Length: 133
Length: 203
Image (cartoon, rainbow over all chains, first blue to last red):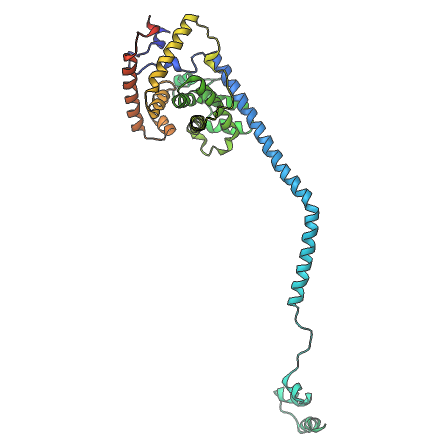
C-alpha cells in the first residue's frame, strides 16, 4: 500500500497518480459501475419509449386528419380528372374534305382517288352526277 | 491489451480462457437491451472517461457526475456510435462536451451521484485523511498543466492506455502524446517537489 500511494515511482520517472484512480476501492467501484449502467439503461429505455410514443402520436394525428382530408382530396381529384378528360377528348364533329366542300360528287372523287382506270360508263355516270343541279 | 491490464482496467472476466468480448459486440448487445453488456462497457471505460472528466473539471466530484451523465447519454444514443471499435474516444468526446457545457453555460450535471470514493473505504480514518490530502495536492498540481497534458497523463498513468489509444481519444498523434506525457510528468514532479511538506503518506 505504501508503494502504491507513494507519489513517485522509483522504477520509472512517472508520478504516481494512483491516488486518483476511481477503481482503488474495487468493491465500491463495481457497485458504482452497476448503478451507473442501470441509470444509463433506464434512461435508454425511457428515451426509446418516448420516441415510440412520439412516432405513434404522429400516426394518430395523421389518422385523425385522414377522413376529412381524404374526402376533400378525393373531391379535388375527381374535379381535376374530369377537367383533364374533357380537355383531351378530340372533337366529335366529322371531318369535311375539300372535295365535299367544293360540291364534287362522291363517285367522281372515288374515281380520282382510285388507281384503276375508270370505264366510260363510270365516267359518264360520275360526270352526269356532277352536272346535275 | 494484456490480461494484467484488463484486470487493472476493471474488466470482469467470468472465464479467463474466453476472450473478452469486443466493444462492438457489447454495444450490439446493449442495443438489444442487455444491461450486463452495458455494465461491462462502463467497467471497461470508466477510468478513461473519468480521466477526461477530471482533466476538464478539475475536481473528482464533478468528474464523477460528468462520467455518469456521459454514460447515460451514450446509452441513449448508442445508435449514433458509428464506429463501435472507437467507443472510448466517442465516450470521451461526450464527457468533453458535457464539461464544456458545465463550464461555459453553467449547465449542471443532470445527476449528482455518490462516486466510488465517497463510499466508506476499508482503510483507517487516518489513512483516508492522508489519501484525501494527497489527492488534493495532485489535483492542485494537475490544475497547473494545460488540459491536453492533463488528459494525456491521466489516461496514461491512471487508466494505463497506450499512446496509440490516447492519440485516438485526444485526437492527436502518438508522437505528440509522448511529448505531452513527458512535459506533464516533468512539470508535475517540479510542482510536487515545490509543494510544502513531505508526502503525508510517506510519514
